[in-house]
Image (cartoon, rainbow, N blue to C red; front, side):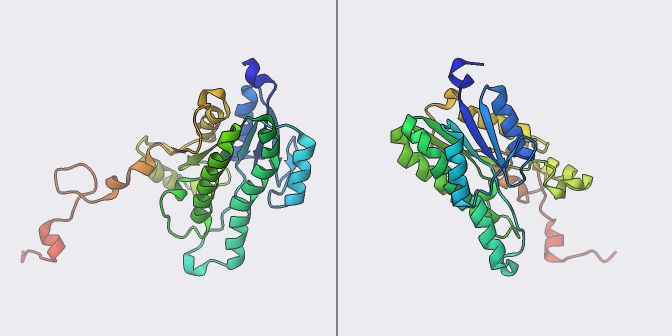
Amino acid sequence: MSETTASRRAVVTGAARGIGAAIADRLEVDGFDVVRLDVLGGGGVLRCDVTDAAAVRQIAESVGDVDVLVNNAAIWRFAALEDVDPADFDAVLDINVRGPFLTTQAFGRSMLRMGRGSIVNIVSIGALHANPAVGAYSASKAALVALTRQTALEWGPRGVRANAVGPGLIATEGAGVYHDPEVRRARAEAVPLRRLGEPGDISEVVAFFASDASAYVTGQVLYVDGGLSSSLMTTLPRPAGMPGPQLPSTASARGEHSDA
């Protein structure tokens, strides 16, 4: 533990479980005094609704100086675009975009005053690639990428950095799709590294952005996805003899058949 991090404070939203809890635990290992926020309070987690501007300001004032802010709190309301309820669309944007904006404003004030600080926004590979039937989720994460870059641009001259981490397929208790072992296996096989991610994979990268090791890095998005976001070409059919999905034979493609 270095003296430069031993006395520093970090705030992590959505820290009651999953990726947020892993991030909080990892920052504590590095010597940060971690304030854990979540709409599910209790057990060392301070209850906070990140969409409540007054509550966020009050907590920021009570916490004092903050060196690192990790905006992890998020929700999803999946549905096909034509079926998305406008109320669900609003809820996703409210928590996933407006929430990080409010916390950045509130906790960022002490960073600006001190002339140092690191903000890490948790986005998604959904911000980079369209995904069917996810409602407003991908749009919200793309907006958070833009907010990250805006923060980096405006606050960089004042000593505050802002970066984003984009998880890929991460197996957490909140991701019900991974309760099916066949889905877990199939998805793991689709990832170039041939495994699903773990919360610890994300927390290690957040720890880098929180540390002085990334002192000259701002406005960046690092996708932690086992190479999934770079594997689009592997889904395209290929001629016979080449690795990957194969094209149907010429006869099959034309609907031809033998008379045997």
